[in-house]
Image 1 (cartoon, rainbow, N blue to C red):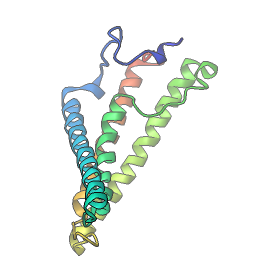
Image 2: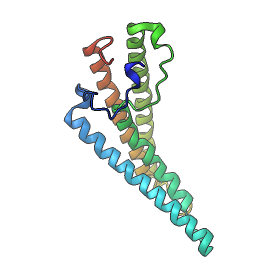
Image 3: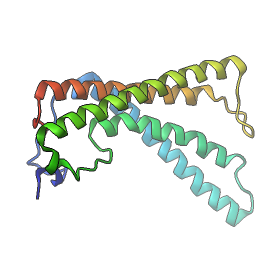
Length: 181
């Protein structure tokens, strides 16, 4: 069995080092991950109470779908930087044996560079939408919740995700091919 398939909570695995795991980034990622966990709790509570209210009391929660949809944005976007920092995203390593250390190194650099570019675009567009939502006072249909905070969370999550990816690129280059094995 290769080294890539070890359990992550194994005591034999050393803690990741590098600027992608610096104190400032760790704190920022932990803060956003905590907010993401809070968003998950809100979604779970809203769903649970909504089901109870609908099926036992025949009174559904007004706007529960809207709440769940908007809070889902926070859940996903705020969890992404932490997942990237822990290398928790899905990774298919079917070709790793065939492309060798250098092929994997180049693939890791390329995939992170593409990710940085896409997160830059998402951050930029989210920021523009935030400004537009503020200017036109965009609100949700049923509950009249303003959209701008959710665009802000989207911009914040994607920006920190891009920062984590850039720092991982720097760490990869500093470590060279095969350093993460």
